[in-house]
Structures are given as C-alpha cells and as structure tokens.
Length: 97
Image (cartoon, rainbow, N blue to C red; front, side):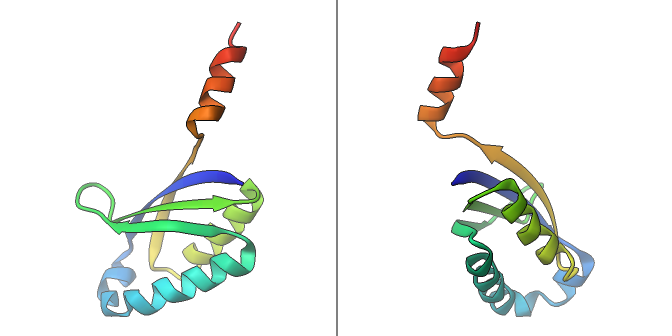
C-alpha cells in the first residue's frame, strides 16, 4: 500500500453545508473502504488547508478514483502528496549514484 497526505479545502458549498460534514465524512470513509483506500486519520486544520487526511491505497489509480469521487460532490478541493516511509526513503537514498 502506498501512503498519501491529502490537503483539503472546503468549497463555498462545503462551508454553506458544514453541519452535514460529519455525515459526509462517514460516507467518505465508506466509499474509501469500498475502493480499497484506508483512511488512517483525518484532522481539522488551522492554516492554508481546512483538513489534513492520511490515507493508504493499493494504487495511485485507486486513490485518484476516491479523490475524483469526493471532488465530484462539490464540497472539497484536494491537493495530494504521495509520501514514503523512512525505510523506503533509506532505500531510495541508498540507490543514489
């Protein structure tokens, strides 16, 4: 499984309907499970992003499907970072010529 950090911002629609956010989060977690995406943690954030989510997915395609499905609902915009655990980082650094 690959790891990702999702930096999310509410759209105007997402803010107007913010009281529905807990229901939307539950639905998003169900969708993630259906697509094989494991949402490890999600945080409300203060700063340039409204939410920060740590997720793992079996492929970039699975995560992209998840993100496009979320985005199509009109409540969030996302920026995605693919991240690597320390062991993978060490392996990458070890291969540097």
